[in-house]
Amino acid sequence: MGAFLMDEHKFTWGGALRVVFDSISQSPARLAEFYIDRDRTLIYRWMRDEAAPTSKLLPDIIRFVMENSINAERISIKIKMDAYINTSTLGEQVKSVLTGEDDFEKYISAVLRIALVERKKKQSASPAPRLALSLVTIVFALLASLVGGLIWNILNHMFDWSFYMGGSGNEPEGVLAFVWGLTAGVPIIVFALLSLLTAKSSSAVFARCDWRLAAVLYSLVAGAAGFIFYNSGLRGFVEGSGYSYGLQETIIVIAYATILSVLPLLSILALLRFPKTARGLLLLTVFIAPVLVSVLSVLGTALVNLPETEVAQLRGFLVGILLRLAMFAAVRTILTEQPKDIDLKTLIKK
Image 1: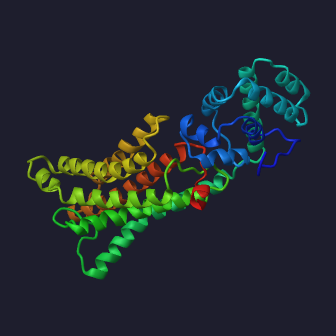
Image 2: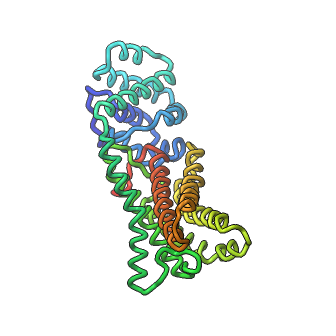
Image 3: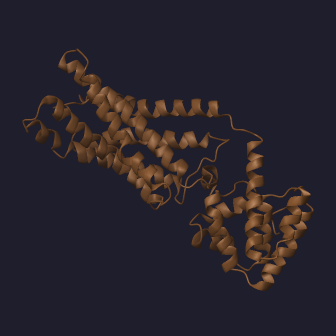
């Protein structure tokens, strides 16, 4: 079993997988790259019982075993696995059913499924402190929504800029628009990553790309999104269209939220190779949620009975805060859901 030690009394996912790789000539890297599209480090974490796959990956893992083993290797797997099963703490009836199966494909399928069930039993025996995790996540979400605005206001004060809350005729242009986008994007990705790192009891995940690259790319694309929006001339075009004031602000905020949220989020999805599973959820997260909360903010401020200058400031504040909250949730959702198998801390140690 090489460097991997096996407890003969416990039947684990890692133990079963080690038996397989101890008997075939193929490496874990082949399974990772050609069958499940994951980082090879994940397979070694499985073999050390530090993680386990979702049930959706089992058919591909079984297919890997069947396509990469000859009869002699299958016999070796069966002998070693039966010995492992018989000395484990599995129930006698389960042992009998597993070891009595002669069809190898049915055998390895049943063994791996039982191993995964045993893993889930172990996890459910020590439930995660969900309340504590939720509170930590809420704190990071609030920081993600507030820190960017705080930094921007500090920069305005330091360099005598007059942009602050922005608005018509008071928006950054050129390089300053890029700086604005950068200050908005950096806290979102940083605090989203930190929230995953502190989720010790969850399968905090980051898939198929380096977290440093993700942080840098997301931040730069956020800066570029700010540059694109504020230098596009969109506000001037809409304000000169003759539409009612309310409709003008709605159109502008839809464009604002779309450009500032979709482009950075798409950069993360690109690093994840646009994962196929749960694509509907991802599209909903990327394209709808941030824009929706921004539009609701505009509609909400339309009901406030205050002077227009104060309403504009309130609108800018609400849109900024809620858009950042939605983007934090979107980033965290994407990193958490796609896929659920790779631990972020392991990638950071690489």
